[in-house]
Amino acid sequence: MADYREAPLATRPKTLDPAEYFNLSLNQRRAEEERAGLRAQLKRQYQMQLNNPHRKELIEDPALTRWVYARTNPYNHFRATKKTSLLGGLFGVVPLFVLYYVLKTDRDKKEEQIKAGTYDRKFKLAY
Image 1: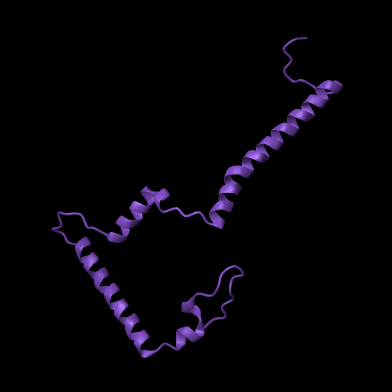
Image 2 (image 1 turned 120 degrees about the vertical axis):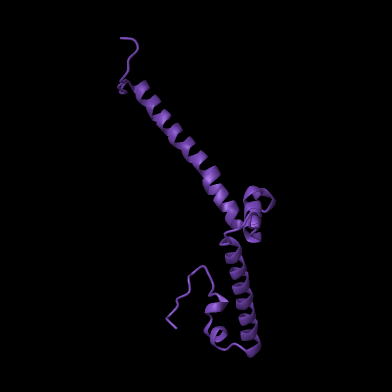
């Protein structure tokens, strides 16, 4: 197995742990083979429905139905975590303060120049 360096903020997945990957018991291997067989059966059944030339009804894909439901109702499935709170602050609150700071300092600088008489007004309304 190639040298796998762990990421600094993530742990190694269990499937890549050499002790777990190579030392599977007979029961675990059987269970994995059964799951692979079930996946193959479901895939074959879906492919048969999809490629049926006499098909008249829609094919129901439960995974796609769940995904569409979750996408159309995001607030029912939202959970506030540290990451989402941080991202909300970074993209929602911080830009407002930065914009306020930039506009305020620019206006203050312009006012100081006007008071000192050094500001060159490009569009003069009165001469």
